[in-house]
Length: 157
Image (cartoon, rainbow, N blue to C red; front, side):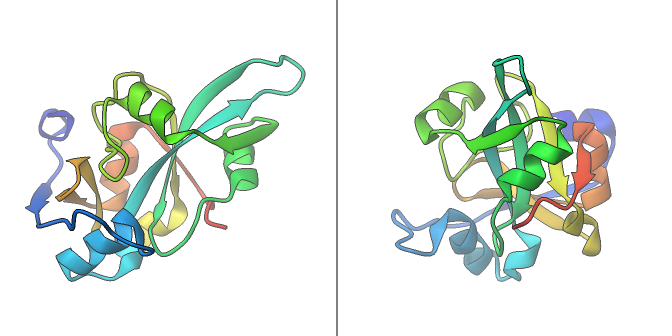
């Protein structure tokens, strides 16, 4: 596990995840199951980014609290791109090897630039997916940024 190799403290939390989440979504259902505020549970989202003039597309990872949503404009600015668009769920699953609702920022099949919202360091620890629904990793935001070699930027809409 990348976190063990990095030597940072973390705690794995397993919980019963409902088969369907209705309108609240996977992240908010996780916050409810863990008994923590939604501002401490972060979702891992994939976007396609377009560079100015080149017409080329690549992907990036945005990590934001489930209490908010990703600002595509802010995400594009954070990675120095012209534009960012949400990736289709099936494409995100194929690129990461994880199922939507369980996409982890760790161990993705294809590495990419990662941006974590600045609010991650406002709490002693935050929760991110451990790679499947019902499994979250509790970690300090600063440690998450360091281990992922991520950019910290204001990317919540």
